[in-house]
Length: 157
Image 1 (cartoon, rainbow, N blue to C red):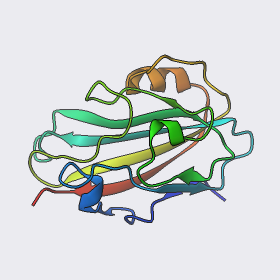
Image 2: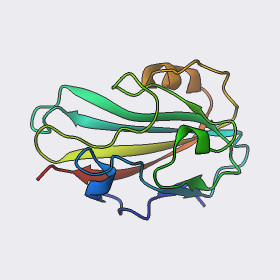
Image 3: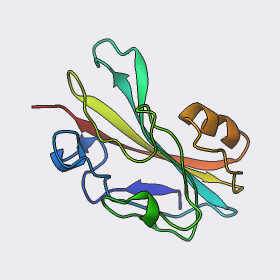
Image 4: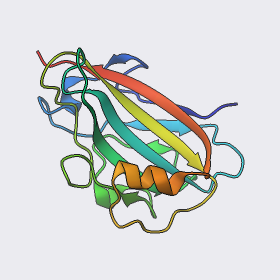
C-alpha cells in the first residue's frame, strides 16, 4: 500500500467548498491519511497554490498552511482544527500571510489549484521556530520516505 491523503470535503482535483475559503468561514478542510510507510517517525503537511496570482500567468506559489512533526499515530486533522487542537507534538510554520495556521483559498482571478502535500519522514525534526515552507523543505531533505498530493480547486464567484 502507498501513502494516501483524502478529504471528506472534496475529491482529488475537485472543487473546495466555499466554507473553507476567504468567501466562507475560512476554516481548514478535514484531512485523513493512511498507509504510512514503515519507519515513519513524523509527518509534515504543506498546502500551497502554484497559480498565484493568475493561473494564466503564475508568478509565485502562495503558501496557505505549514505543519510538521505530526505524530504518525494521528490519522488526520479534523475540520476547522485550531493550533491547540493539533495532535500532540505538531508544530506550526508560517504561511504567506506571515502567520501560523490555516489560510483558505482566496484567489484574485481565475480557478486556482491548492496542493495538500503530505510527507512521511524518517525523523522527528527539531523545533524550527515557525519555519517558512522553504525552511521546512530544507530541514526535510534526506528524510522523506514518501509524499502524496491531494489537489483541490477554487474560483471566486
